[in-house]
Length: 456
Image (cartoon, rainbow, N blue to C red; front, side, top):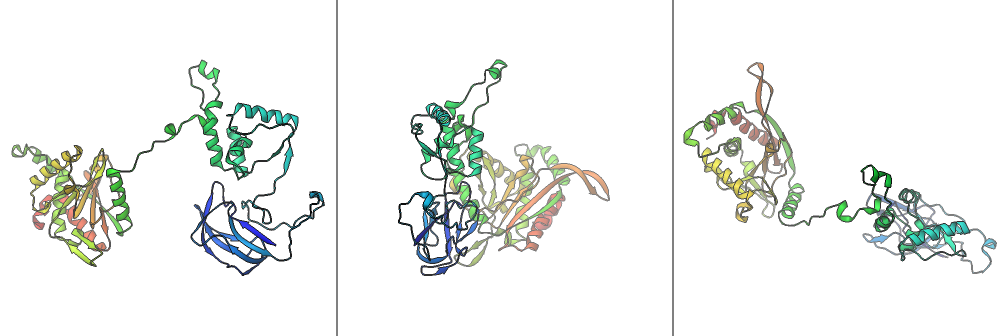
């Protein structure tokens, strides 16, 4: 006889699976429990054993094809079994031999794709109860039962039945909506959401003491449960760029904690200089200057990888990107030829860049290019992180918050102002030693700003 094997339920809530590969072909003889194919669900790759011993007569899906649960998967010519053609009563028919099957696979091997279910004749009591439920439900929920109807147990798994029981949902009503298939947890939740508002019951006692009655599971609308924001504009571009960078460039991140007390003292003295009163020179300006100086000693961190030309492009200029958080999302505008600017000019450029970004007036030209970037995560009170490289760049430096903490200084423990630097770089372009040397150069300038004279 020809026996059909349908894709079984491989797990609660899974409605389909992809055929990874067939391990048999039409004409092959297979033994009971022999592996037929590998299929992949959202959770795992599963081997399907054969519920029959016989010959494969047809495959209903190709490798790479997605098959719905319950759809025909493979046909067998089962040896030694013939379909019964008699119309004898069911109790006179010989009982078919049960075939082994995996737990949760639903249909028995020799059935027509549905598991054997016992029927139950509704008693007068049970029918009256069911009728009351049906009358309370929306009119299109289910046909009304009568005392002469034979009710079939809805098809579902034990976890789904327990879930429905917790919500007070009758699976008979759910089955009337989903049709002749296995009821999933999702089906129960959808039904509960649709009828929950009508079945929610107010609690007078709760109202009497000033508390709102607890809301039923189905009484929440989709808008109350979640907010959906279209992916577009800056967010869409940023997401695409970060995914491209993360899966293209092999990232390495190194950290270094720096004593920046001398830098903070320098900034305090600059603020007292009347000739600089029109300029705002902050820690980021000194860090930007230190980065530009250090890049001159480590050209790999100011380079880009040209995959098409199979070349490494070393830049002899620094277009310094500054990550800016705006209401529209994260953007990284650039300071052109930053290596040519003085400390005061860098401070002015940073101020202008920030004001333009906050106003949402940053032009596309200012966002294009860039050879190295700085992300000031310290303004959010964060100490360190692992920043992702902007596409096309080989390095990005994250600057942490400045914190006063005990530190060894000249052989004693003293309160010092400390900062953590986090450098991510493209390991195709930058070796570990080169990345460490760059980070040490930046740290040396921040620890002793006079060392900048040695790198100019």
